[in-house]
Image (cartoon, rainbow, N blue to C red; front, side):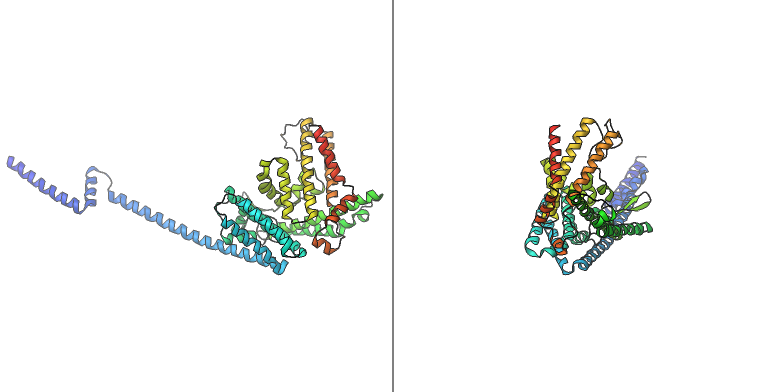
Length: 476
């Protein structure tokens, strides 16, 4: 029995030696045998599954990278096409003078590239653009040519500045490539007539939306509106009194009627450009918004009724050029709010005046608008607080806390402010005389012309604004 037991032990030892040798030579198979002995899944199967998963993940990553490369290539082609189309559009309107617009675009990108590690790119670029515009207008080219390309330069400047501030705030994650940047600032739908669009809007436009009859109808309607506004501006408004509306009066009345004619003619020339820019931008693919399963085409630039029948001067300013008003509020007013409300308003209107160039009459109008809108805003806010009435510059929401909403005296007070706004618009628009010599209009209205027009109206709007401010201070 002992011999048999020893024999078994010897046999087992021999098997163990073989087992150890097997382990050294084939560790994976040993682990598999051990796992089989305890009824667990084998490591080989697990490793095979892991390897298969890793291979699948690698294949998916490679496919994604290939797709991204393809999309990136397609996107670059789209941006390049946008650049070429924009350059061609500029050439059709300005011929070789378009080189000044291209130079501004390239210099803006170089400034962004050199300041890419800074957190104040918006400020740096704004200062650079201001210097470029001032030097260009004063020393580089003649006034007539500069005024022709001023609109396109202003659009390029606004786009570049907005992108710089968006980079500072993180709204845009990284500096776009040269093709992306130039495609954005030279986008054919906006580079000539405007309006300003954000970089995200441009990216959505480049991705492309399915065109439809609604797209064509919306674009055509905007172009039709622009032609109607052009007709009113050139053929109706200058002869409004007494040819179309038989109103006669004394010398003072005639002065104000003539001033109203000039103002209306100027207003409709702005509506013409605004609706034209709506049409061209939508034809180029901008202005699409998705609503559930439908795509809505709408690029609102102007609201004529809100200007001709205004509730307040504040709404006039925002309805005159909606995209530019949004741009000034986002990138000028909000950044200057740390200085206080009134200084921020002055900074905003000063920025607008400088973007329009060194024009005395535009600067005078815009700064006057700044004072008028501020005085109107604070006065109506104070009256709304005293009387608990809906007489603010903007319409109150339905659930506002005011006790008096649609009382007769409330509507009458709002009507008084509406008439006051029309009075201010007539006064400010009186200097834009369509009967002046074409050469004088192209070179810009002189300071003497502005002072003369307002002197003929006895500086009435400025005196009324001062009286409103004094009244506001008295009721504080």
